[in-house]
Amino acid sequence: MNTIDVIIPTYKPDHSLFTLIDDLEKQSVRPDHIIIMNTEKKYWDQLLEKTKENPQDKYDNIILEHVTKKQFDHGNTRNEGVALSKADYFLMMTQDAFPRDKMLIASLSKAMDSDVAAAYARQYPKTDCNLAERYSRKFNYPNEPMKKTQKDVERLGIKTYFCSNVCAMYRRDIYEKLGGFTKKTIFNEDMVYAGTACQNGYAICYVPEAGVIHSHNYSCKQQFHRNFDLGVSQTDHPEIFGGISSEAEGKKMVRQTIDHFRHIGKSYLIPHYIIMCGSRWLGYKLGRNYKKLPRSFILACTMNKDYWV
Image (cartoon, one colour):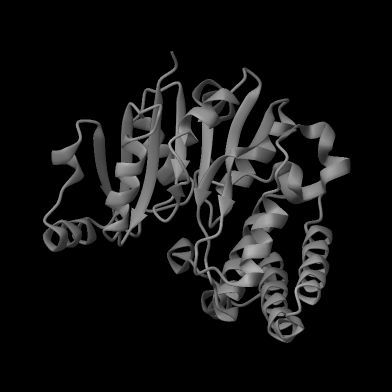
């Protein structure tokens, strides 16, 4: 039987992290290890002091590693987590995503055929999720499973390379052949890896029966910063994104969301949604052209200022 570890980068974790760990420990396939890559030890110490709990006392399979905020990188910190693992498969998760049931790990592991570099889960909205974000979950995470390869680029476009480290399982043997996640990236390390995998003859699987609860109600400002960094990541990796446009897929989602608001009798949500989309588009366009911008302006736009140090 294949061994499976879970790797979770954390930053300023709260008690919900312990809920996530409990959920993972109760999976039908229990992970061999849960590896926590925590940014800034002081925040971990504050959490233990506040909760009077320590998962390392409760479970025998917790590995904890601390990095500083300056050391943290979306790609390389995850690589460092993988280096602490010897498992055949490893499951990348974020601290704010929670298994929908006890079959998450089992469902993803079933998809890990010899040619599958990664398999990612379906994301379901939280109860407080706004309607626009709730619909985007339906758009990006449909009911039908998919096995995507480089042959699908003409049909699926940028979605061929879509994969999310909110919850995605990886084969270690392919990971090592491909050299892991890019070692310095502002964002989007999962899609860069997925694109590299597809271009090297491997597949990316979407597994809708594997579900996590995960969503955000981002403000227009937060959407701007997030999409600026998304644009930067795509500009920094022309070998992956150079020949594929992501704007057509974005326009499709905007049209369908507006139609959805009209269909459910909530057209009054459309103006704010259009402003939100404008914030995303402006951030993305500026990020794609960041090399033409002054450094002070970049620092005002980015979500991840430490990346530019």
